[in-house]
Image (cartoon, helix red, strand yellow):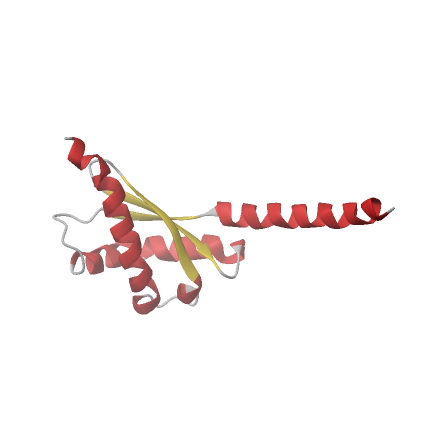
Length: 123
């Protein structure tokens, strides 16, 4: 029992790695080459997977890209079946990872605050 406790995490990493190779090659989406998979979570029973992504172009196209990825989820799942040795491949669901955007915004605010404090420190 203890041996299988890491299995969902290992399956999630395997799926993320394989999807990272499949998406730019197999999808006919203008943003496919801008997609970076940032995380994956697989349910304990391995029936479903949540795949998180970010876009190089930012959040502007996130909604449409998520819609396209979720529309292609069945195709990607079928493609995974031929690439991984699992009895069943989890159902895929894609979500835009907003943490990357939030992190960039926080960095920007920190840089701005430091730039504003610099003249005060020079006095």
